[in-house]
Image (spheres, rainbow, N blue to C red):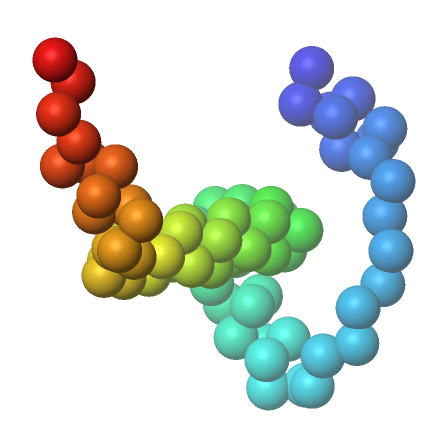
Length: 72
């Protein structure tokens, strides 16, 4: 089934410098994944990091007021 997923995926090219490409291939080998899967995992990690930064941000006044609202 995994083979079908790889064959059925649409693809595109992204230009990266040679040293980044070499590092990407090394990382893919270490992880036992394809270069494409490694890139996908990296993108997901960056998205998770972005969400984590947003969650660490101080609450706005309206958010604090909403959380402190009396429900009864």
